[in-house]
Image (cartoon, rainbow, N blue to C red; front, side):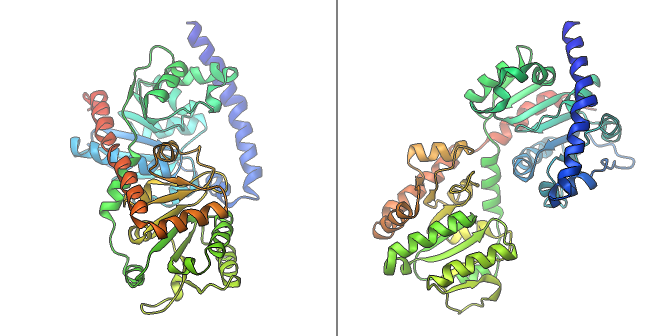
Length: 430
């Protein structure tokens, strides 16, 4: 009874104070941020299926595109067990939703409802047998409503880093009010499981299941198809290719510095620069930066097979994996700015990778650096040294790439483990 009273208090504060404040802040921020404006104006309830007898009916919630990619192999593994299943997917981030609308295994993809009446309406439309949240994006209203309807809620691919604000004792009471309502937690690794046990309390079963992102990266690499023109352009290059993926200006500035230090040796490398967001301003910065340094930089859209180039600037999206497939060396962006992007994308192809100093957001990057399956450089001087070493001793580079691929392969299989655990929960779905 005491726990119920505490939860009731937090519900009143959440719905009466927290959500109205969040809504006001979002409306103000949406005036300057297009992504936030989409999230505010585009929210709608999920659509149902007419005359459906699907079972089980599953509601997956993901924060953004990365978490949805992790969910895909789990959804598909469950689909083999339950051929008549129906899946709905909610997103918090507009960027994730916009890139995922055509996913063939989902009945509908929609923004997560936040207001209590909208959450209840979503449950009435979907009638889920389970709510499955991927990684970290637990919203109290969603969990409380599921609990009130006796619908299992499972947190999968769950992580909790030592530095997370979720570890703060000052906010533990409100977190416990909804984390303790979970039916099951499947953590990525034992350190995460230990911290989550402390957060959830003694009544929530927690097991270690691994991380389905490894399965998804492996799946995408094996399903990737030739991209035609890009394939032709990169196949023509006789020497080594360096792919700098998901770059920001910081990486490109340091790449330019590194190449200037390499001198003629640097001209043995063909560089493919893939900006994180190929906007007009970003492309102009890249072209001016390398062009002024005397490099023959050409945009992908302007090239034809047989054209010469030293640096190719990717002014399209969706082809980074294909670039890594052709690469001899890889640099992963974000790591010289604030947060490294996906280091598994080049690793799955067995490519030697170099990153910058900002990798703490990625447990796999930290582990790979520690075990020597990926290198780290702090500045242009260090980058030039790495590239020079790889050019002089290509077998050493190949060895690092083999270690990177082995790291990924040794962590495959989490999707099946998670699906097995979910099947136990869903065994009596009807």
